[in-house]
Length: 479
Image (cartoon, rainbow, N blue to C red; front, side):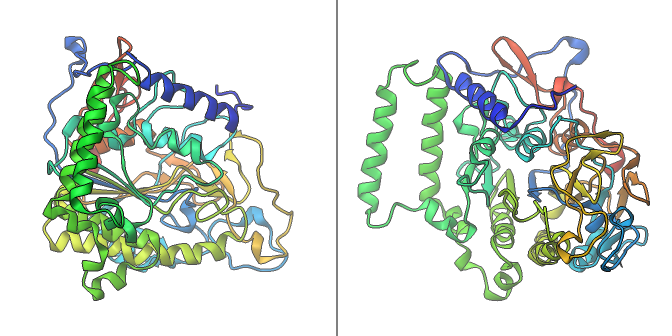
């Protein structure tokens, strides 16, 4: 059982220690695939996808107010919050037995291209901390870890490599780190012991992505080339072990070379959103997330392997709705609805959707009354009045780990399929086919042709891509 008193400071200390350990001399060596015993040899898997796009609803997306509607109760002064299940009415989708909530009409119209998991169940990590649950979702491992666990994007980059040699294999769009939990977020936005070569190419502002692959303003190409050569010589001249192991040293050199090649590649134009036709750009231009979806589509077209686009986690903003939950979701749905639907349609029209897996997810859900799970409550972080007298209380403000929704499109996924079930009355917890992070990751890896039992060696021990190699793909989701 996790320590319920384990807090943000503990997480930051252990995450920082693990990162420093991975970067220290000798901590991470050149990593051949770890060879398990013959009876656990990873199976050969035929991939159904070449690219994985994660659309990250950072902060806790309430399933009953998005993709798993329940009984709707309009706001009334004096209403009992215990009766509250959905603050939005139900709408139809392109699939008869799948319903959404109002405000997601455009995604609803493309639901016949994807599958809906209704039963994602987050782990019990004690006192609920967003960065801890996000770390767990993105690495598959519960913090703290004795080594720096790699992000799922880094695992895919290391295992499969780039689809196009000039393109970064792992691209991360939309997250900044100058907020209240920036250091905790950095703990999993990295490649960990796999090395900087497989770390994320960070693009916090999609409309400025083109600037990230150009020489700095005022610097000529010749001067930039000379600076690149000088920096490379400096790295080569640095004694092995002074600032990292031989593996880390070589990985940094390769990372630098890859970035340099991108600058002069025709694929670099994909980063420039100003080149997108206006009619198309306007559909995506709902804010940074919408622009990120457009950038993801453009990068998929030129050979990106793994892309994450986030609504961005900032404490108490975006999906982290500790007040005004309903009114804030009205705006959030406007930000995500058109861009996500257009991303699906555009990839389909270009013949790319069948080989691109899109996964929309969040670290956990929200409930009006329950913090954690109904049978395993943790300390309340929001006070809910006995009766609702103000609109700011009309929403689902508490962190709920008993259920959650995940959308999947393309990449070999069965079309128009619901999976799992939640209770009709709150707490609307999972009652059929619970999906853990291990099995969700195994499903994503399986689509990419990676065995959940694959492991890399670190400190003479195997580090599996799903926890202890136990992840099991949800085979019913595949066509």
